[in-house]
Length: 158
Image 1 (cartoon, helix red, strand yellow):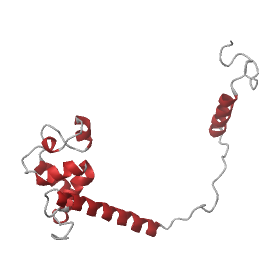
Image 2 (image 1 turned 90 degrees about the vertical axis):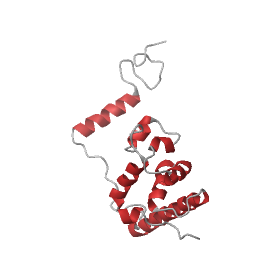
Image 3 (image 1 turned 30 degrees about the vertical axis):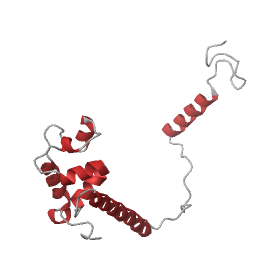
Image 4 (image 1 turned 60 degrees about the vertical axis):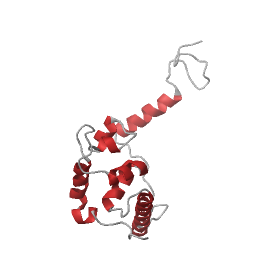
């Protein structure tokens, strides 16, 4: 058996020459460094996307997810879910959202949320040892506005 790249056991290889894949890679690398122009994409895109229609579709899906979150929370003893409650559903999943929505402001977020590591808490801007539910609520409210945060997602008897 020959050492890789030095023998002739591969019929595509000449002794002392690199493997064809390496040769192509080196060739492309040289073309990029030497300013060789790569083929340009077609002038017209192959698929036309109506950006406004896409925005409407995304908004509709987001609204549907928000409704599902609110309905889940209502089914789990959160009578009138707010945008802030549904944000918990989005960020931390259904079971955790219900616990957060029912929690008091002075309770730790880590006592309400299950299944997250310290790194995951940190990635969500939460210090597992010190961040309270009230601090998390205030943080989200400051980003979206107090009025929006406290707006009900569903009517009380929907």
